[in-house]
Image 1 (cartoon, helix red, strand yellow):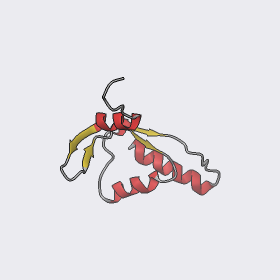
Image 2 (cartoon, rainbow, N blue to C red):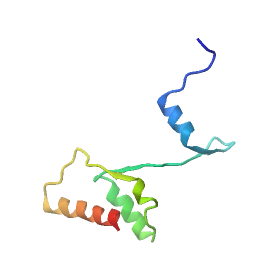
Image 3 (cartoon, rainbow, N blue to C red):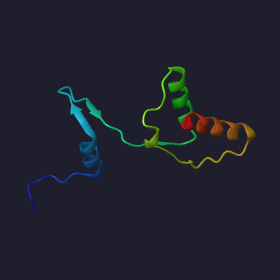
Image 4 (cartoon, one colour):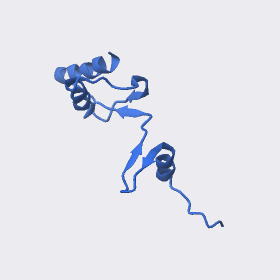
Length: 88
């Protein structure tokens, strides 16, 4: 056995994406994949729209359905609105 401390998967992922570590302990990491779902993503994209910003690197966004499946007309319209934002 070596004297090296074994890293968890979380630690390995963090280290692989760490851009800068400040002396105060705060970190800047690079996020290369955004996984969105229909529950909270509409609010996030509305925030970008209201701020006059567009999503950066839309090719890095992976939309996936959550356990919630819209069944009402209102819910279907909301999902269509999110898709419209993502695709433009």
